[in-house]
Length: 331
Length: 145
Image 1 (spheres, helix red, strand yellow):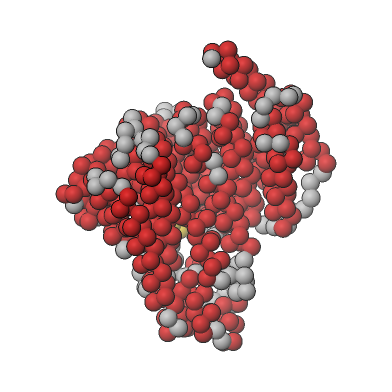
Image 2 (cartoon, rainbow over the protein chains, first blue to last red):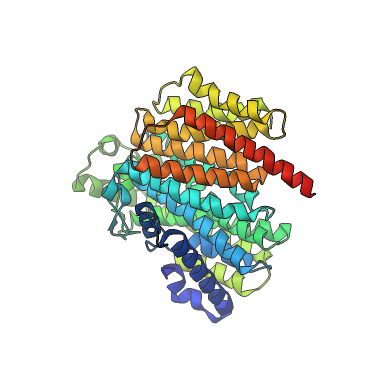
């Protein structure tokens, strides 16, 4: 099992031990479902690549959140693991497509499907995964989940299209634009994961709202943390550092620096399509000295606090502790 | 949803296509699928949503036969598929979802192998089949109630 998020010791605390065990079992069921879908005796090449993408070592954050959210109520195991699979498939398909848009050669230190088979094949493989997700969803009418999921993929694609629209444009890319972008691209699906779990389990409105708020804040926190890694010298997900800058996508640390301490030298560097290592180092130092890293870390803490605060409205179950541990683990 | 509202959603998609350099579509590409779907569906409830979903699905495929920026093509394809999903999910019709899933899977496989170009006339027949399948499933559902 590749649920690296659950492997962190912080999540194995005794307070959430029962919840951890349930999540582990549902993740196993989810992966068994993937195996059944894409590794049959008649499996095609498309199936092979779909399975590779789904089993490629992700954190399983979205299915874990759905499972934990459903744990506050009563939902049949099969229903939960199927919905977990749907969320993970939506997320995985979006990553396959992201790699085409970003022209990425590697993800998690492995060649992307885009690099192996070309953008066209990779695009169709993403749709292939989505088709399988829709086929599972057809079994979940009247679960209340359709309403949760109906608009999310469209929000994600609009977020990505907007990002493409504003590439290299320092006028249109502002801190507020960035926060809206990450909400659409990342936070909405994480929010939907929590809300779908709540709906599947028949939770009341107050609990739904709490889990929704938690997911929304966690999603933005998660993306901010990921974007901060570029400036704190750590590698995330095997993606090259500064991939975003090289694509003309500016994240909060840099946007803060631009707003606080813009100058012609760095503006010229940012406009360069091909940036040397020296250029990137100069940008990194400028962002750090301008307070961009500190500002972003502060913003990240705010979202973490919001996520933790949202949990207060939930009953003191193991699931609540596990959701709290996820925030702390990602910190 | 009214026909006007469904058309407005498609128009947003057309605007995105134009913005990202995918040029304009012929009258046939814009209208034929919707006209076919509405002709088959008649006055049935939710006809505008289904017709728009059929058109959105067509556009997600059509993009792969148009010249343009590859990254934008993938994202616009995602947009149109997700529009089809957004229109179809609230109908809570199992048959429709099964048809959407099956067609998306088949087109993905065929397209990945660069099989024959997208056959528009064959797609209109598919629209006919899917819409008739929806009518039948709704009739069966109301008879069971």
